Picture 1 (tube, rainbow, N blue to C red):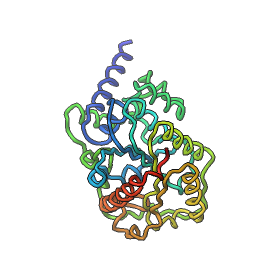
Picture 2: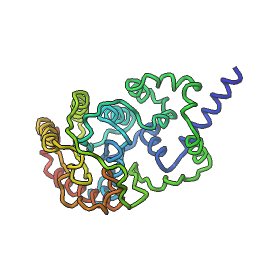
Picture 3: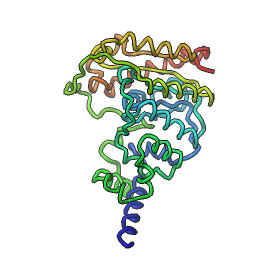
Picture 4: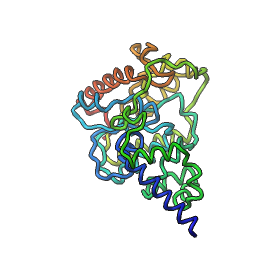
Length: 308
């Protein structure tokens, strides 16, 4: 009993410190899963490509709105939908949602959660816990049983907790602003060069894309679908790019949702704008954020292209 009590106390120490972080990724999780009644006009949603490409500072300056980047590394359509539902359950629903949807990764319908221990300090949020449990049936045990959860909290987790307790920013914490994670380096990393192949939109991912569109419409959230730039205009990723893009265009058209595909843009052929083959660096993200901000203003002024 003493041993178990010590484990619970240590875990409480870890989690409390994590939730005290005022900068970086854990402050982002605090915003999304712990705080209540946030009032953002616009949310950016998607995987790390959303997290690293949409700069709220630039977007807010150009549009005059208040935005937040809700992109999470490795987030599939299912995970993105779960995060959106969790957010809307405890905050004011956004007026607009900009969802970065990558046609070249939609064949992968795994429910795998990147860095899943990051969610542990927020599992008291019942809706979040239930949504995560649907993807990984260990999460209920992670919540109740420190013998199960603590082995996954390595030295980096303890370090982040101590940073929270001591109110000290971590190495990369200052690179994040309103959920937007800028690249630490401006040099182009060619170490993980993709090989083009035929791809598809899996039945499972199509289901969750449709569900996200329906959820947005039911909650009066105006949705925009975007595919942000990739190096090589997408030709390095998929052999049937046009077919996949046309499928997304069709999904958007049927649902009266705008879809903007920036992988065809000649502006983003320059390797100096990229951190790697899939992610813009800070310079590229700045240019793209300007592009999407002006496009948003053009579309929102007409309003007819947004779902009702």
